[in-house]
Length: 395
Image (cartoon, rainbow, N blue to C red; front, side, top):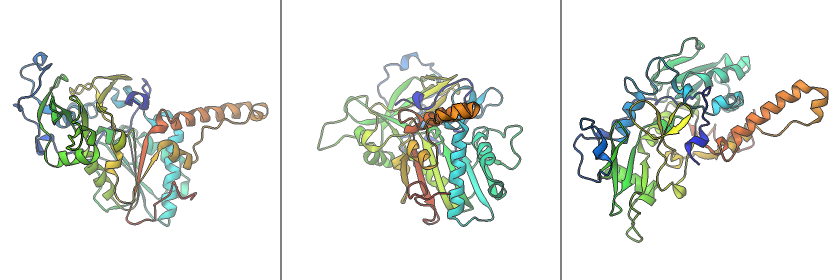
């Protein structure tokens, strides 16, 4: 499924995936990083690019396009991400309600601490935190310390209880729930493509989206490909990958997620995103763009979102669980079952409200859409918060 199918587009949608927890290292910090004079490689379309536009790896180009001084997520004014796409948070308040239910389970598992952290990584405009706080019982809400981690400036009118910051809190500093909805797909990464000999090379790109191949992938990135995206790596025992096979090197996302988990001294870290697993990596990758509610070519000039599906299995640490969003939300009480018709006779307005909620729940759990998202759940500081969605526990 394409990202377009999973990030339901609409002029009134919004997104909370709008930033990374801290500035990732640029591509130039990695082996084979960005350079204005790349090694020779295929350049079928390079002749049309402006001569003074530098070549960069996709990781470096996306970092500037998304989070630079006039980046897609950080530029002042304008509609922001809300004018370009929406996510589960904006599909229905049921999503925030489900996160509130999960937070209450974490609270119970931790013995109801005096201060309970709720960290939203890639918080957009604070919509998820606002919805969760509204859905919590007063006794719980009074103990919650909400953190929004987002590079964009703090929105006007946001609940003053929310601690807005550009980077994650210090490691091992909080107890509670860390939740990241459609964040990792916007952590920039490098793209590899196999050449005529089946050798994976870094894809270099100009600001207008023109690409060429650079140096062969080597070092830790080559090791990552061999382990997590073997379809793009030559195999001595089998045929070489077909020329043009692409892969997205997820090491920056693995590191970003590991750092996010380390924020918690005790509790549960959860990330939800469109994802794929090792056995079914797409042969041509998933890199794409979004602008004004439509999927567009990924052009790293700051005019559009740049996103790629997440290899959540590579991100997962010891003790982590992988679920579909459908399974996770069902475990949190979100069901698309229709209300009984008898309710229409006794309470027509209540029936219509219940019917609307059922439709929203069906969208959130549709296995061919948002319900097909991956949820990665990783306990921190022990196993107290393990199995909160799979062990049959309730609030």
